[in-house]
Image (tube, one colour):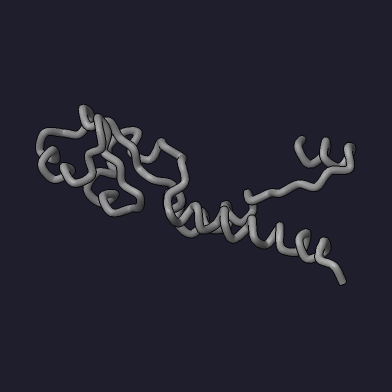
Length: 107
């Protein structure tokens, strides 16, 4: 729908979804970080997660704890980009903007 409206209005579309999807087919959860309520972490893992506690949440910027905690319901539910996700966003932004900026340079 966004592409249709953009075409009707003569607007460009900056779409990072294809690149993100291509990366997520390799590992579905790799582009977002883990944010999980500390209160939901089982007692047996409370000491283990201490280095990852920020406020009331366990926050992990990669898959470091997936092998241990990935079985918890909702462990993968936060879709905020992690460092790998920001790499995709940055790369796609540069690919989109560089030609536009080059066209604006004086000859």
